[in-house]
Length: 201
Image (cartoon, helix red, strand yellow):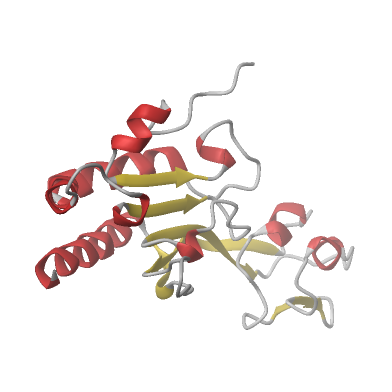
């Protein structure tokens, strides 16, 4: 099957002229089994919100001839905590999350959850019950996927929301604004970020 075209921007000419640089991870282009979010829908909605707020026209008004890369508003949407689209270094970034919890269902002590977990110590089986250390867990949800008895399930899905990350001369990792945010909260945080930036400048 032929991969779908990347979301939002389809040609180098369109990309160079756009006031935004909005990217998704593989899920938004050709699909990914790890994704916890509909990244394409979210990316499209982010562009709509930026247009509604007038950010594109604002950026164009600041450009003397053409829009240089450092002038663009950069956003990245990652479907899972692997964060392949690098949301940690963008003006606005999100990555999918899924919080696992233990249920009252019988744990067979198969240890599949422990084996699949890439964060050592994030999940352990103690007295035939899954125990989580959420200071280590990255909320990928893999443990729930492999549990044969649903002794582990996903309590909530959402997104980590980040802002104000950048590279360049003075690189900075993004600030974390919210964890396990639903889509409405994601868009409200974007609206606030952009509105404050336009007002400030």
